[in-house]
Length: 113
Length: 116
Image (cartoon, rainbow over all chains, first blue to last red; front, side, top):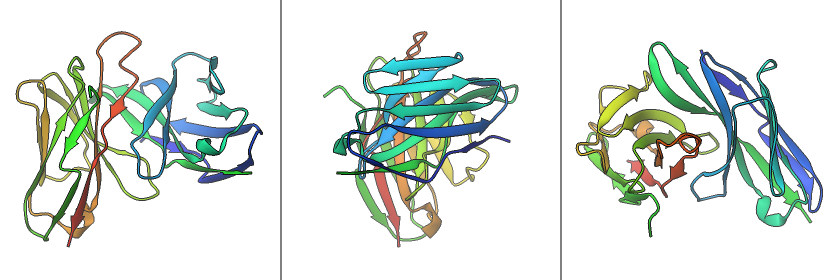
């Protein structure tokens, strides 16, 4: 089957750095995405990793290790507006299914002043 | 506004009734996805269209759920004989077919369904 594991909650201080981990189990793995969702809002795309390594976009970076079935989202210089839920998602493709995206249960990030 | 739109935003219905939701994707996007999300959980994949073809449907989806995208533009999701367990936020997302772009899904605001 397919599954993703990420911590349910993380708390950090404004201005600090936080890392949200994600481990996955899937067949036909294509890549790992990260989405942000504020309370009452829709998920918004943050990043996508298909290859091993670190991708940086402003204050956010995302890492993937295909051999370890592991990735993380790194948020730097935390701001209060970063308080939200963060979801990792895998794109997979098997012989019995077309490409689809499976989301994890999400990590709720709370920022303290 | 050229984002993904969904209608209605809220729907309250009685158990046993049928409901239909509409999604208008970003106009140049070929791929369209439906998800269901309950409180504290991530979006759960329901179904996926590429143009008008429904390429994938979750095995978790009962026969009471059906989706269409007749002209490869807007899509509808119908739930027949609603049950209280169907209460959730139904999200629609679209993405481009272009290499490097189809991994970025743009989500609509969702339709919140409450089944009494």
